Structure formats: structure tokens, C-alpha cells
Image 1: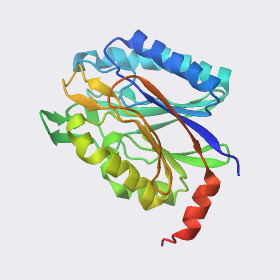
Image 2 (image 1 turned 120 degrees about the vertical axis):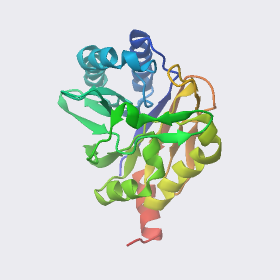
Image 3 (image 1 turned 90 degrees about the vertical axis):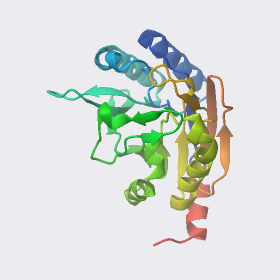
Length: 262
């Protein structure tokens, strides 16, 4: 069974929408040159800034960023999981935190984050003050395989990954902005646990550096893991990074034969 080369991009996104997009486009080009077939960006890749800037960010993403990325997806024949961006809710004051899948001429796919981050670490954060939770799971076809979608705080809810696996997901793309405080204790353990529990590949790019909006430090350590829980690639805590790893679906078949569930 053919392997798929996956890329996970670690970024330190800020409030400059154009700069963030330029960084993403450069990473798509670099990934494609290294034969990546699916490229996953971190949560909030388009904009990490003050809440007041969210309406303009949502407009920029819809009108400029997504078309530009989709043209690159078509140019390089790749699938781009475009992290997440604020998506305007018609008639409402809040947004969805939405991850977009861009595939050139194929219809785009999107996932609206279901589990919103609420925590008191070094600072109180409550995404529900800004965002509405999504209600639908997302699994999309890719090269005769099925890829599930999740976003950051979703990682703590194994029931979501159970549903994705039940819908046929063989891998999950999970853009994140996991904090350093919780990341040191839980990030690697939880990413590996979801791979092991549901015998799936996890493509988990993360932000690094200080979030300009919350002033909370992000953990970095973007990862790609396999269904046995092996870490195929991991970034350091700091720095923009491109991780590449092959998803070996024959290995997945062997793991699933070895450990029977259900």
C-alpha cells in the first residue's frame, strides 16, 4: 500500500496577516519540493493578535488567504490543512475557530472546533468568550485514505477521536496552539495516546513563542506519530520548522491486526 509523505509546519504567527500568509506559502513550496503530499499548519496560523482584529482577519482569510493557498494546492498537487482562522457567523458577534482543507479543483472541506479551550494556567483563557463551538465531526478522503480533523484542545477528548476512527479515519490532522504550561506536562503524552488508542497517525503542528493576544507562551514541539505511538518527527520548542514523515499504512494494518478492539 502506498505511503503518504506528510508535513507538519511549526510557526510563530503574529498579527501581520500578509506576513503570516507569505510564511505559509513559502512552507508550501518547500514542502512540495520535498515531495510532501499533505501539509498541515498550526492553529491560528493566519492571525494571532488582539480580539479587535478578528473581523478583519476573517475577511482577509476568506477573500485573499484561502484563494492563494488553494492556488498553491492546485499548482503543487498537494492537500493543505490550513491550520485555523476566525470564521464569521452571520448575524452574530462571535466566530467559529475553523480549519480549512484546500485541494485545488476539489471541493474544500472545513472543521469548526468543537471543544473550546478553557483553562487557568499562568493566565485565564476562555475561547468561548470569542468563539462558538462547532457541532460536526470531519473526515475527508485523501488518496484512497481517510483523514480526520481536530483542533488543539480537542486532543483532551478521546471520545472525539473514537468517532473519527469509527468514521474510518486512518490519520488525524490536528493544528494546535498548545500552551507551554500544559504542553510540558501533557502534549507528547496525549498525542501519543491518541495514536495508540485509535491506532492512527497524528499530524500535530503547534505554534511556538508568545501569543500576542493572550501573552501566553506556546509550546512548540510539533509532532508526527504513528499508530504504535512512535514519534516519527518532532520539532524543538522554538523556531519555525518543517517536519516531514512517511505515513506507512501497511504498518497501520499490522498494528490493527495485532491489537484487536471492539
